Length: 229
Image (cartoon, rainbow, N blue to C red; front, side, top):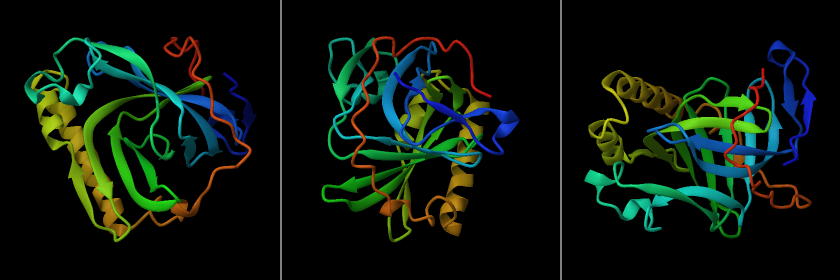
């Protein structure tokens, strides 16, 4: 893992910033016991006081949760989806790559998806815990509820059934569920106003052709030695 850093002008508390082209890990903790169960090696596009942008290339080797027998989580009936035994597997990211945009302390990140041939498809607002920075990446926790946003500025909620089931399964209490709903409504207000990042032209961005696909390190689930400022 190469996590080159640079001290950016105006960086919060004088903290280090990752240089464009640096390779870091974008990870999610399990909502139950908090272990890392999703890990995606990504390449830094931009890292400033206002925005962290990273690129997950096609074919990236990632880690994802599966059921104990190796079958996909979404194949488990909703009622037992979050209580059935799980494990993790290494897999390749299929299809086109994903550009991820995250503002500091914001309880969501925005992902951009393209069809083959770079035909822009949609934005995806992933509601999540504000990311914790550490030396080699960022960690978060997914909050189940999501929003799809389309080029015509229409939008719709995603995974409301899973959001409800997570509460029934005890993975999210009433107070946290209210905060997630409030975050979702705040994101919808940004969409309706067509604010950043939707109006910023990121759909026209393209990765550096010299970038190679980052490797998944053997210790992808390591506990951070320290968090970044």
